[in-house]
Amino acid sequence: MADMTEIAEGVALVLAPNPSLMTGPGTNTYVVGAEPEGCIVIDPGPDDIHHIETVARIAGERGGVRAILITHGHPDHMMGAARLRSCTGAPVAAWSREGVSVADQELVDGARVSTGAGAVRAVYTPGHRFDHLCFWLEPSGALFAGDLLAGAGTVVVAPPEGDMQAYLASLQRLLAEPPSLILPAHGPAIADPVGKLQEYLDHRLMREQQVLTGLARGLATVAELVAAIYADVDARLHPVAAGSVLAHLQKLEREGRVIAMPDGRWRLMA
Ligand SMILES: [Zn+2]
Image 1 (cartoon, rainbow, N blue to C red):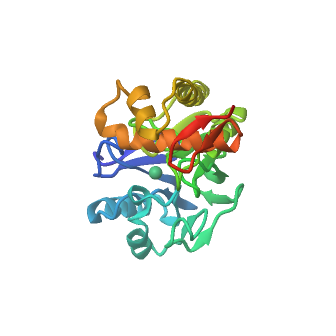
Image 2 (image 1 turned 90 degrees about the vertical axis):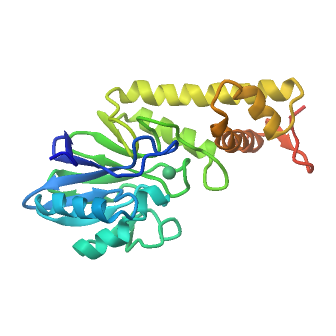
Image 3 (image 1 turned 60 degrees about the horizontal axis):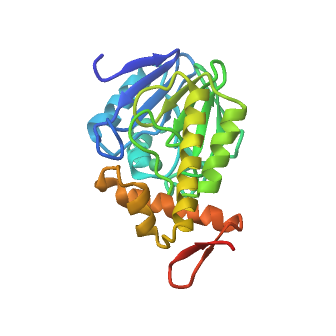
C-alpha cells in the first residue's frame, strides 16, 4: 500500500500531506498495534480528510483505534484529532487540555496505554513545547519522539511555548535511558539514538557558547546575536533562530549568567 509503510514491528507510518520548511516531508502519523487488541494512533496530523480516512482505514484493518495520542498541541500534530475521533469513536489523550483543547484524557508522566503491539508509556519531555510527550513502545524500546528530535528539518525551541532549560533536561533524560530506535514526527527513523541525542545536546551547547561569546564581544540584542551566530544559515530561518537565541538567554538568565536590561538589551553578569 503506497500510503503506508511498516516501519517497525507492529508500527505503520502514514505520511501526512503537509510538507514545508518546518515540517520537512510532512507529519508522520503512526498507527501502533494489531488485532485483536487494536491500535493507538500517535499524532493524527493536520485535518486533511483523505489523510484521516486513510489512518482510520489502516487502523480498522488492525482491530480498530483504542486511543488517539497527541505528542503536543501544535497544529501539524493535532488538528486532525477531532475528525479521527468522530470517525472512530476513540478518545483523544494528551498531556493537558491547556495544551490540546480537544483532549478527552490527560496523561501523566509514566501513564501506560495498551495496544496489540504491547504497552506504550508516556514520557513527559517539555522544551519544544510545555506539553510535550514522547511515547515509549515498551516491548521494543522504540520511542515516538514527536518534535523532541527530527529526522528532517529543525526543532524549534522558542519562548513563550518553548524552554531551553527544559529541552536540554528532556534530551538528558532520554540519554540516561536511551531508546533502541527513535521514530520522530518529521523525517526518517533515527537508528542511532545515543549518537543523535548527544549531537543535539552538543549543538545546543555550542549555540549557548556562541551567545556567551557574542555578549562578551559587546553584541547586546537578539537581532545582533542572530546576525553573528546564524550568518551561514538560510535567512528564512532567522525568525526561528531569534526564538532560539531568546530561549538560550532566558536559560542563562535563570542560571544567573546574564542580565536582561529594561531596554531589551542583554549583558553578561559581571
Ligand atoms: Zn511542534
